Image (cartoon, rainbow, N blue to C red; front, top):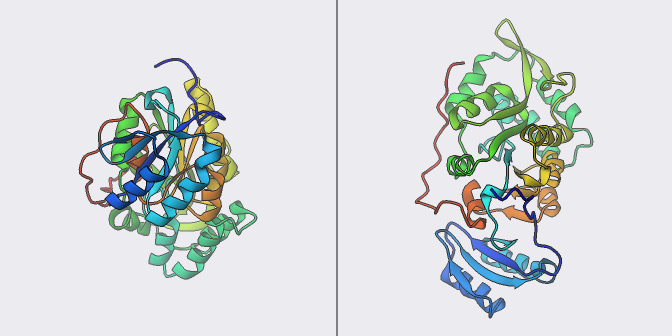
Length: 320
């Protein structure tokens, strides 16, 4: 490791590289990008193409976005010679980021309350709810009296990893990064994922249980259980993790999809909007809308080459 704080984005006026990628990136799409940014050299990578030094971000970003939308691909402007090993922390949201589901919505569906809870969740993730914490308490309150065994059912039957999750976390760990799962979801599921993937730190909310049933009460994570993990709680978890490591937040890479991820993504040196809501997409420089989580590895010079992706499978449930 260089010991220098990494460049989180291309400095003003410095030509950025352009990484174009998609699960089914066509030759026509590649040619369209090549022609638009000629004479930038084109480098073929394992799961992407890289156009070297296409220009300063400010002058080319609009063209990149237009081409990406037209060709249905991910196209990100990244600093040249970026190294994953220069970063110190990988932070991930859980629901609809590390896993493909909203765990609270799945629990509510099994309890017969799916439509009521899902409507509030969708509004909260789009940033249409002023007080996320209160919306979470409202949703959990609806589940009062629910059999706690449904938590195990969600874990066993519906907790599926997002594509590329295992490869991303494995590559980050091999590069020396610590890993953080910061979620407004629940510790019951987060700890299962922690064991399955070898995640170092979890920050999650906790469901109160009594006599085998949910009480309808939710508590936050230590050191402030009276305050639920919301947008600011996720950002604070990232900052604590960086403090523990002895690095700055600019040496963190963070992934999220919902409005309550925006402060965490803004704090990190690299904030990635992953298959995200419009408000989140607008807040970040980096986006993955078509590739899996491991698509970010194509941005770094020292990441391991991609291999054939495996179909996403349910995360094996383990008794605690």
